[in-house]
Length: 213
Image (cartoon, rainbow, N blue to C red):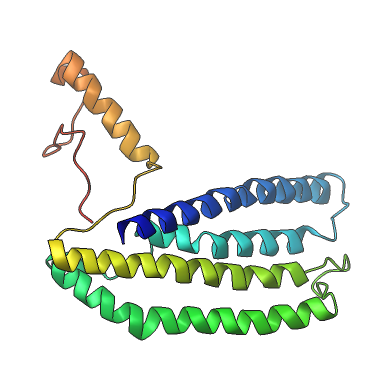
């Protein structure tokens, strides 16, 4: 099970990081649109299509990666009060009751919409540019398959937690800027003393501490 979990995590991370570049392309495209629209009064016919296509693709294809890193929204104010085995048991039931039926519905419905769109090479009706969007419908199917693969890995995580009482977490590959800055400040304090920087009361200098999951 652990081997499959690592495989699913790596697969989700690869797709998530590749499609994360969509945000860069979208930023340049929208920036260009703003400049030519307001500086030269020459708006592009494709800016709106570009924004929703790239944002939608990024949102969909990063879903499995976010799931592998436990980044989706949940009622943490209740969930984090439970013991790990209770968390795992509840998650295991919810995966089979809601997650897998929803993801399978996404895949099958997406396949129908995608196949129909590919048959007549659908183009966007939201702008005069007529940008092809049939390939965008395929993203629905791809995202659903990735979520299904990652969902199986999450089920295995629940099973392992029920056995051991501990969660098998994904490897950390990114850190929030705030956490990096706090670690740098802590190291500075350890080197130069508490006078070097103002430390919030109650802050622990343990740089290896992980936030509660």
